[in-house]
Length: 109
Image (cartoon, rainbow, N blue to C red; front, side):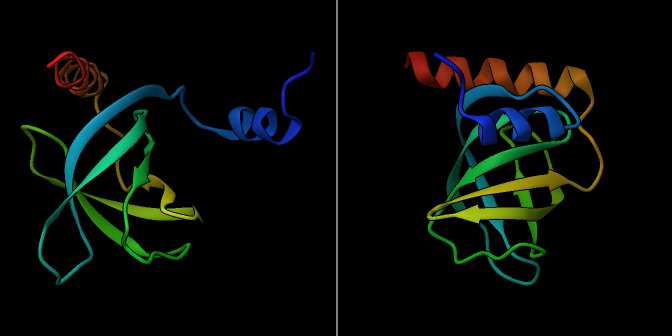
């Protein structure tokens, strides 16, 4: 059985491998207040946001990963209540590893 061709194309276009996570984060649009949301995958270059915010491709966001200051990101695509986003500056690999570990601890709790 072959994989979904669109999924394979999307995966090949990504700049970095994504890790499946389920992490609680804070998110906001510029000039607005922070609120709680979740990310479902994470890489050094971006993430998949699960949020009820009405977002459009090209929108700018600030995301606060657990234990870190806010980081700027841009919405690349939206589908229902999910959005694919790209960090303005890539995460350091050690930060990615740390946040993934936090996500595993949150899932085990």
